[in-house]
Image (cartoon, rainbow, N blue to C red; front, side):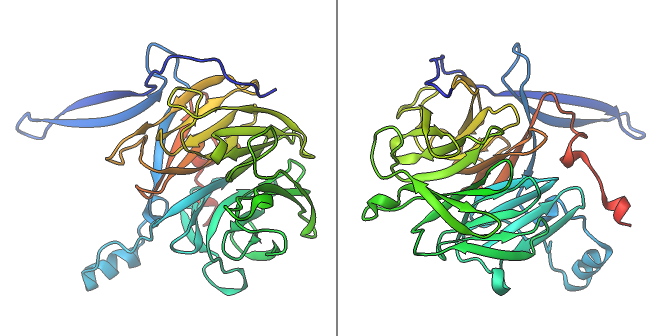
Length: 371
């Protein structure tokens, strides 16, 4: 069960190790200093649990500069032709593809790491997006995007080709998050509602194959099972559903049919509490990860609701592991954690210590196979 966590002292789980390499220079015996910054969570002497690995900001973070790109810059004098994030919100990952919603660009940006490619999804045609917020990917690679303005869930294949949509204003007011059951048959859509929409602070249930509305649970309130401006949603390997209940400063856990199971969190500044919870994800061990915009980090709870660790820091530089307005969060099939920062227009990636840098989908290079 997902109970209230035990209290722990607030410790800054951030360690910066500077690795300095000295090499002899040519001819004059000068030395060259090489510096690499490694962020470790938690710091020594505790055993590492996560490492900061990389950041996504623009297409240049995955797509290599081609000969034609270099020629164009030489002839025109123009700088980089990379395409970047403007106001990112949600993030999802599948087999090395990292999908990020951008509310200003009204699209999903896909960073395909193994193929060293980049693509814009939902910016035109029948699958065009109005205001994409939350998103997720099913186990079979279907991409589901909650479109806040059109009040629909848009569905694409793993490469961004539009397949279908479901929802509509009859059932949804402000869809902001979507999660898929482990068997792929059911979609759970968060409706954030508003001040005048008391009954639309809820979770709606849909059949993915047909887009048929199956029901809902929740209403505006403060009791167990109630919601106040729910924001994001995630499902664990057992099919249990976790909802970020933003206005009540907690995360609630439900069975797949909407039965309340437990909750974690309360308003406050201490570890295990929340100030502005937003993004949420689960890993294969059913640990729960919650991003907090005010704290500038994400907290990790075990399936019993005990706080294990928090990762990240609030700061104004936008350096690796530093956040000002974190939003969406996800955990991929290899255990890597991705967290969006709206202010710094980035997605930071954290690798579990049990995984080597060249392992998992982000460690693959499939471009040779393509050739």
